[in-house]
Length: 159
Image (cartoon, rainbow, N blue to C red; front, side):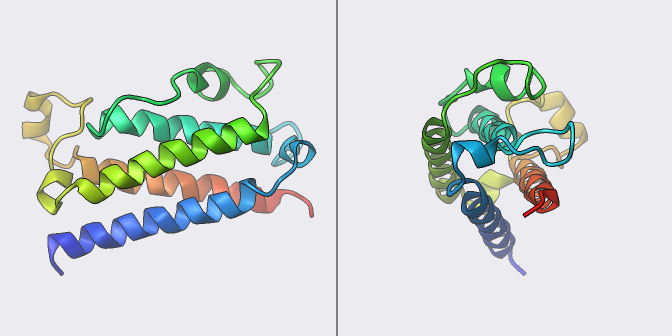
C-alpha cells in the first residue's frame, strides 16, 4: 500500500468519526446536552466543546493555520466540566465545531503524503531527528482515536 493510500484511509477514518460525532451531538436539544455520560461525569455539552477545542488546537499543531476558538480552552480543556457556570449555547458550539472541522479537513486535503510525515509544531528539530514518528500523521491517528473514545462514551447515556 502506498503512503498516499494510508493517508487517504486515515483521513477517511477521521471524517467518519467526525460524522458520527456530528450525528450524535448536533440534533440534541440544550436540555439533552446537559445529560451526564454517567452520574457525576462529563455532560454531553462538555464533550462536544472539548472535542471542538482539541481539534482547534490541531490547526497550529499541524501547521494548518491559527486557532479559530482559543476561548474554548478555559471552558472545555483547562477546567473540568461544571467549573465554568455558563457554557456557549448549542448553536454556538455547533458553529465552532463546523468551522474548526471544516478548516481542518481542508488543511488535511492540502497535504501530500510527504507533508504528513513532517514534524508537527510542538516537536523540536532535534527531537524529531531522534523520533521521526512525532509527525503530523501520528497526530491525526491519535486525535481520531480520541474522537472515537468520546463518541463511545455517549453510548453509556440512558435512552
